[in-house]
Length: 232
Image: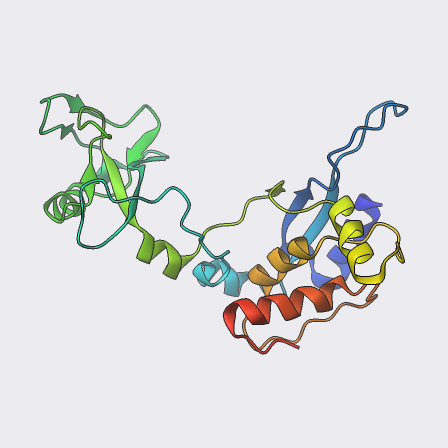
């Protein structure tokens, strides 16, 4: 029913407010009797006014848990992660040579790409110890992103969600609560939590028009406990 639902939602919310079709890896098991085993479910994302979120995109972020951050050089600003200093797209003011100070090797952006910042900004970052040249100092430039900045900004959501539970996990949760399966194909709580992390603030009212197994209420309570919110 994905395509029918998309048509209905376009009519209700406006096609221009459609943001993404999220693919949720809803089952890990394989149906051996199927022609092809379906392992995903779709989640359609619409905004009431997408132009607001384009201008305020940093408000639409997931919390960053700090995976992959460390502080090998004992930077007083704390743990950091090395991000690429190259971006796609050709920008004339971001085309210049960068010399690795340790090896003398010259680096340029790949064809069709640019450095992330212009040369003046790069010099400021270099002076501020925000540019590194790989773990051993013999590679191309990378930019430090500090954990404190990551926590403040959050991280961008992707359209493929395979880092949350499956319908099996949802069923297991209900069995723990009720001692039996009382609802078919329940959603896992962490899936709804992830949706709420993106789509709510601490004082939001959350509407689940069908209620179902009560997973949304469960997720709201969990999220309020995690961040001190008062969502209803």
